[in-house]
Length: 284
Image 1: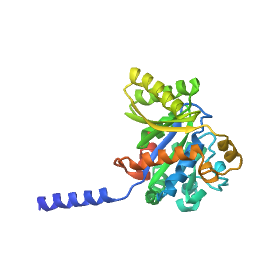
Image 2: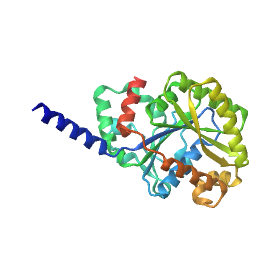
Image 3: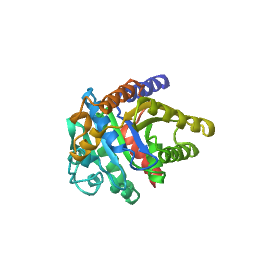
Image 4: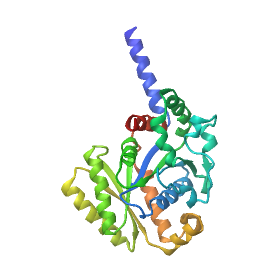
């Protein structure tokens, strides 16, 4: 009987492993103004165009603007599924090229107010989010408890920096805090607003030297996004540049980055439900 019970447990565990879980990536930056949200939106569209199902989770507790970049106007936010009869599908907005968006923003501050019963209801409704291949968590900028919570709860971390000295120092501070609290052992770096590919690589090398010298974190270069006036034009028109100008250098950079992300092994994941279980533990 014991052997049969053990065999049954192994079978159940194997079936659990086969279940599809979304790959959850937190994208953040040490300071604002580095083009983080613009990167997230265009990366999401590029991943979607390559046959993936992608969801953007706008987790900027201050000023989330992923909806603005895609010309969307949300009526609800993530916690309406707890405080009303709405389901998760009711608050998800379909954006450019089929990318989905969950508006969260300042509503996430209500996490601490939820009772255990409300948390269980919330987690149960999140199960359907595991139908996605990628969930991109677009956080605010800086070093604070909320951002560090998302870093600790997600699987992969992408930090966006620029060649500006202030961006490098603030990005380093974010890596230092992540290392100090042992939230992650590695991070992937995007250099945005580089004038040339060489400047992008040099900027990463400079950043990597500082991290390697003083911290235990490993950083990996995912690539750069070249400065282009077309990016400014696309923001003003509220249309992502990979759609409006698919042949521009920045769009090609995003394509290369998306291919790198898709080529990486998917680490073990408990999906969206697992993410929020971890967040509840951190925020509570």
